Amino acid sequence: MNSEPRAVDPQQMQALLDIAQAINSISQKEPLLNQIMEIAVDAIHAERGFLVLQEDSGKNLHVEIARNMSDTQVNEIRSPSSSVVNRVFDERSPVLLHDAKTDPRFEGSESIILQKITSIACVPLILKGNPIGVIYLDSTGDRQHFNDGTLNFLLAFANQAAIAIENARLIESLQDKNLHLQTELQKTFGFPEIIGNSPKMQAVFEIMHKILNSDISLLLQGESGTGKELVARAIHYNGHRKEKPFVAQFCGNLSEHLLESELFGHKKGSFTGAVSDKRGLFEIAHKGTFFLDEIADISPTIQAKLLRVLQEATFRRVGDTDDRKADLRFVSATNKDLAAEVREGNFREDLYYRLNVITITMPPLRERRSDIPVLVQHFLEKIGEKTNQKPKRVSADALKMLTQYNWPGNVRELANTIERAVVLASDNTITPTDLLIMQDDDQELQPKCLKDQEKEIVLKALEECEGNKTRTAEVLGVSLRWLHYKLSEWNISRKRSDEEEDEE
Image: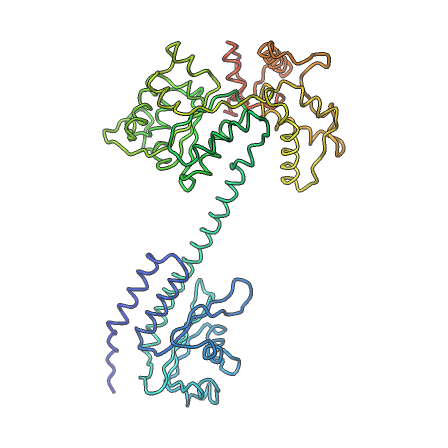
């Protein structure tokens, strides 16, 4: 008897290499399963075969693909009277029938007799110790019988196939989740989420629709809290760059060197503390949309470098000599009069014209009071969905107060006010006492004195909070960033507490 080991079949070895390549090159389940069956049938010279996988819910095995077999033939093989497939799956061990007709384990099987099967090779697909499916192959008539070498190959093949199938499943699952997230993003940042029926908001929507699928630079002007970033996101996620990144950078109150490093990145050793290479946000946002918030606050040096990015679509990391591509759509925002900043010499005129190809001016809430009831209802419904509770209602007196208030923090302040009122309301109705709006009952709205009223309210709140800006912002329902900006505008500087420094 010859005891020499059986030589490895070159075709079977090539098949193992093919499936290894398939793991890295085929990410969709259906074409991957087709490739697996094609390789398996060809490699062992089988006449027919099929592959079954366990359904996500339960133990049931589902036929994913078959070769040279009708549905009736596949069902006969999988019937209870022919337990090859179920046995292999349940016992997690392969079955090899050299002569299926005479094998005592399946003697009298109707499917084997009727379909004239001579040889069967059936192996489980095992992943992390658990079966996920079965590969079944057979031959009929006078085709050559399978042997032990056939089984050894199929076991090695099945191990790689199981990994490939799982990878494809994970990729498809991630793609489904990504599609779901994209849908949710469009719901969040699509036009329906920018609430407003007033003529001024309709004018904003009209411009947005016209520029959605262009790469034209957009300047958003308006007071803090009017929704400038919301508009920028809506344009991105409804436009042709929606599959690419949306990156936002706040430019106010940042040192020139820090902002430069954030935007452009830096090379290792380019300055003290640069212990490694760092990608800049321009690089991260490549082919997407870049939102520059408070663009009026950037230094002349950053202005010059930003102008180069806009003109040449290239940039350099700090300390680097190599140019990098920057295919970006720029959307910038400011609550200052940027044209006035140009006239006063604070902002480059050439950069202004590059950024200001199209301008959208976001109206303050006091100029679109008809939108306040709709916004209030929108925020109440969002809070109800978030807390899984029925939305609260607003009394007529409370709604009148909301409509007459000046809203120095605009929509952002309104949203915070409603959220706070929902918590404070003792029942399902929000009353004026739940709003905590800082406006005297005998004061009528005086647009001409708005700035003075805004300053008075802020300073009064700051005094009541003993100078703590974090608590003041919370009480006013505005962002800490907005509060710092206003105090800087009024040339008011106060020492920050440890709590505030931690907050920032």
